[in-house]
Image (cartoon, rainbow, N blue to C red; front, top):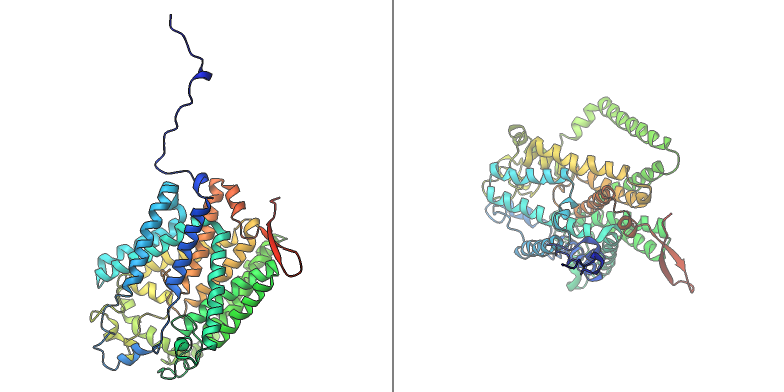
Amino acid sequence: MATTIPETMLPAPVPQRSWHRSTEMLRYDRRVQLFFQFVLLALFYMICVNLRYMPANDAYAAAENLDGEVLAAQAGSAFRQFFYFALFGVVTVVVFYMRGLKNLHAISYAYLIACMWCLLSATWAIDPGISIRRSLGMVVVLASMAFAIEILGARKTVRIMYIFLGLTVVASIVTASLSSIPLFSFAVHPANELDPELIGTWKGIFRHKNVTGAVMAYATIIFFHHSWRRRHWLDIVLCLGAVLVLAKTHSKTSLGWVGISLMFSYILYRCRVGNPSKRILFWYGLILLVATAGMLVAMNWDLVYAYFSDYETLSGRVAIWASIMPYIRDHFLLGSGYGSFYAIGEASPMLRLGVNKVVAAVGHSHSGYFEILLTTGIIGLILALVALVVLPFYRFWTASDRDLPLASMGAGVWFFGVVQNFTEAQFFAPDKESWSFVVVFILIMHTRYVAALRGEDQWLVDTNWDTTRPVRRHGWSRRYRQRQPG
């Protein structure tokens, strides 16, 4: 007669090994966290830091004879391209091993659709080879950032930005102060610049004073919010240092918008705190502001028309916009193909459309909105506005009460990026120095939104940016403790 063995005495079944480990096992692992912090820091360094000893306007000098590098297809830095693709390969393998298909949610569907449209535009581009290379480069950098942020969470991502921006502030002040020494002469625009307004302005460890101004504006916003929340002396010193470098750049756009961006972030925070009726007042105020601006433009249309008819207006940007308008009208629906209008060799339409030789030598539209409309058509522009303007604002506005300080800081950075794109071409370019910080906050808020949908409440608490408070100990020394939820 067969003996029945009780189930309690049977050996436990051996669990089948999954093709990827669970988030709980590796997402909190210290070595994994250090790896992705290094990834994000390396991306910031490769995107932003660019030492240039030569004048910023060498391209314009070549415009006197349109047969040199201006006509050449811009291959970019081969080392940077190799770095981006190699890093993407490593990060993708690691993240898929850890998270499987879950990491595909690190980017919003709206952003993914917009990126797919950019890739698709290579099929009708003026130069399909350059278009596909540039669009793939854009997707690679975006995906690497998204995967790293999805693993790190908000707190450590903001910490990496804080460290990087703090180092750039210190490095820019030190190098600019020592610019009289030839080794550090890259930190200030030289005396042989074609544009006399550039001479003597600070650019620190960046390639141009306008880039420095934009990055320092983001640094000012981020350090200001840290100072507001933590009252730490280092936050205040770095904020003042960022303001100093920003002032020394004489970047009019950044100087003009940074204060308004801080005001926007503060208003969004105050409207979300306390009485819900403040939210209605925010929308009434916004509608009133837009209506007032529209009325002023309509009442002074002759002055506005004259202002934007002068090719010297906005440092020559009006001349650039006037040059590309005929092409936009003729290719309104699809555009020229992503990245396939400027710097593509003799096929570039700008060489025959430019109102003068200097405009013909410019490498972008000096407006993110015009750039997207020009290269991806009205369809691409609509997708970009949904993915980069409408949806991010909705994420900031509807953030949970726990994430309000983070959303307020991110909204200030995002707002500055949105308004800066009126005069600088940054959209769909996470490898642009300025726009990369905006993309980071867009991705942070999206990952927290997805985590909330999945019910990952503990991860949201563990990675919340505002869970630390300074505790004074032994005079000026401080330590930080995690605030208990609830």
